[in-house]
Amino acid sequence: MSETAANPFEQQQQGRPTGPLVQGYEVIIGFETHAQLSTASKIFSRASTAFGAEPNTQACAVDLALPGTLPVMNKGAVERAIRLGLALGSTIAPRSVFARKNYFYPDLPKGYQISQYEIPVVQGGTVSFYLGEEQKTVRLVRAHLEEDAGKSLHENFVGQSGIDLNRAGTPLLEIVTEPDMRSTAEAVAYAKELHKIVTWIGICDGNMQEGSFRCDANVSVRRPGQPLGTRREIKNLNSFRFMQQAIDYEIRWQIEQLEDGSRVEQATVLFDPDTGETRAMRTKEDAADYRYFPDPDLPPLAISSDWIERVRAAMPELPRAMAERYQQTHGLSAYDATQLTQSVALARYFDEAVAAGAAPKLASNWITGEIARRLNAQEIGIEAAPVSAKQLAQLIGRIADGTVSNNAARQVFDALWGGEGQEVDTVIEAKGLKQMNDSGALEAIVDEVLAKNQKNIDEYRAGKDKAFNALVGQVMKASAGKANPAQVNALLKSRLG
Ligand code: ADP
Ligand code: MG
Image (cartoon, rainbow, N blue to C red; front, side, top):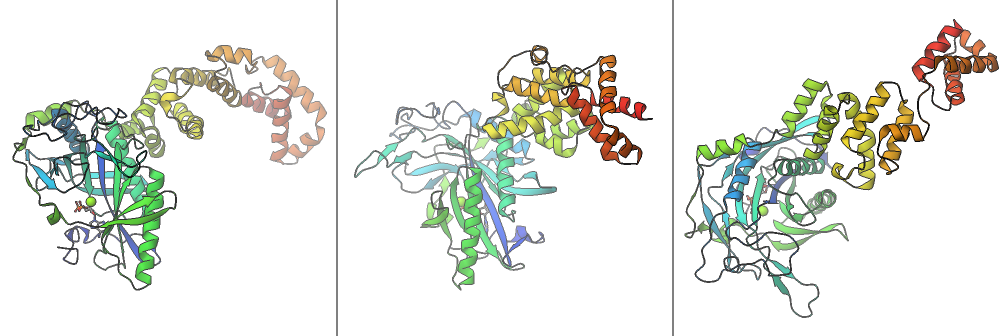
């Protein structure tokens, strides 16, 4: 069997709008993502799933496929699959079936992988996200439970390879989309959204370096209106940056082939970050090559509606619902609300700042502006931010009550971030940043500045707004930045008539 036969995904693509063209070609992308489920033990055994242990110290008799052992389903893995299904509006199959996927590889001691084939646990559903201003919806085909394989180690060995079976039997949820994506940017945005959801609902730690969230990108190109082109599958993308580079390269490569009059052969390819190129690993197997059949060692997986309801009751509020709530209750823009719901931790930080009395709009501005910029620059998450939500709320309070100007607040923030103090008020005091609230002193400064700047006064009276700003600037300078700009404005206006 091959894809010269009609692609089963073809029909689902009828009527979808054409995507942006690259050299006259439309790009088609579908994803298969392996999310490692955050259970303490493996999917069919009680061995630990902790990362980084000495090779082969976390593989028990079941993982080693010793004769006489039998797999026992881990309920925690099933529950996590249900959570994903509920989060994405999928159908949870009341009865799904485990199947053996047969292939030979040294890191697969049983000679088959236990997976789901004909009847997966999660069916359908969608992932929606913003690509710039535009909302995109990618349809899921399915998500199925399966076990991971072990790992071959080629480093530190001469003339031979090592096998580490610690990872064998680690629970995975493979999440498969329709080929609905039409550009690299859309594919990366999809992957980021899915990553956000699986970490948000706590089913996967999302650690991409450790392989907890790995994506396979299926890429093809076609002339608009033509049937789907032949896909190549880029395996195991474990960073968003590599994902983007790999897909971009693959698109260019395929177009070049077609322009040269060659065909694209269906293949599995790997991305090499050192060269920035994708390289064929093997020609692609078809399902028939795996001789799938239901695993006689495992009964069908039965999920009662009771169980589903219990899981539903324990689900956290999802990012989209939370963003909508922020818009409604705090009057934030859709954009700001989306920014604040990029992770549970960020949303919680915002909630804490608001609970501590910060005006929501100001808290949102600080978090999506100043704080986001610093987190990005230092490549850390909000959990590691040196300024707590409470401190931020205090600082915002001091701007609101006129103790410090915005400018001074930024200096206070800088000091807090740099660890030069804990208490907002102490830092303001120590740095002498208190705004001038003594109107007598301010009036004296204004009069002094006016006396020295007759030229500006004349220009202002002749209708030049710039001259007024120059005067404000002079007063601010003379007050060493401590004057309240609104007060300065008002005073100058009244003096100038
Ligand atoms: P396999 O597991 O053999 O890779 P699946 O049918 O499970 O096959 O998954 C196929 C994946 O490839 C899906 O994500 C699907 O959206 C995607 N896909 C199918 N056809 C195309 C195509 N012509 N171009 C891009 N992606 C495709
Ligand atoms: Mg595949």
